[in-house]
Length: 216
Image (tube, rainbow, N blue to C red):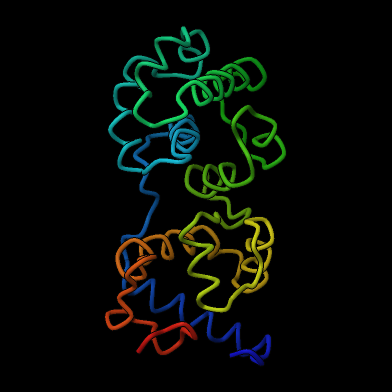
């Protein structure tokens, strides 16, 4: 694999994608949401915690603050109490209220559709913007690189980079644009169910024959 050509790597990547797509036909964003506003807030809250934890908190949050305008006017202490269990709740409260305020004041209550506008919102970096664009608007702007995606793509020798931005750039050069959003979901599903960080189940992996890190 060390001397694998770019063309061979692209062919292997296509086969990996096909196998994972067949294995996880229901792969999707795990954060429960009904619109871009809810997804943006949920994604901000998901930092340093689990999607399961966020999904326990957001129903209460969105019942209290159903629109960006409602959250924009919220008292920080009230929001903090609701989201406390997600960790870093003071910073997250500041971010999601700021997010809601800018969406309300600068975008007339509609979450914007571009990377530039999204990343200008409080609490929104490129990763969060990619989540919103790909899952709320169906726009494949980039690849969401979380800990699972970074770990699996390094194991698969699709990248040697360390930073999410550089890992994303490698993946964008390896996979067709229309696969970028789904790719991250497939890798996350596989990372959670089979390629588990401390106890990888290589014997149960559908792509073990394509992975240079496989133990079987």
